[in-house]
Length: 98
Image 1 (spheres, rainbow, N blue to C red):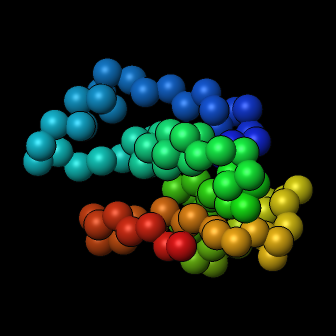
Image 2: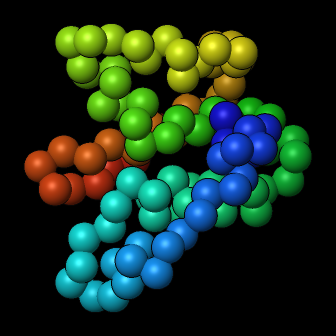
């Protein structure tokens, strides 16, 4: 959950990633994760406690035959959350599953 995960709060944007903010350039996983984190951290603590945000790698792992998506929910009961945010990248398009 981004707001409670100190590692996620230290998402580092490189100059190569900030260059991707120009018009006509594709976004990447780090930019998507950063913006979701930035948006969620703007909410008050009560609102943040009702949300669980997955990073961009969760969906890839969820649909993978290798599995391993359960590690993304370790330590959090997603059934107690009102909203789950799942960033999805398919066919060069970004979606946000809520």
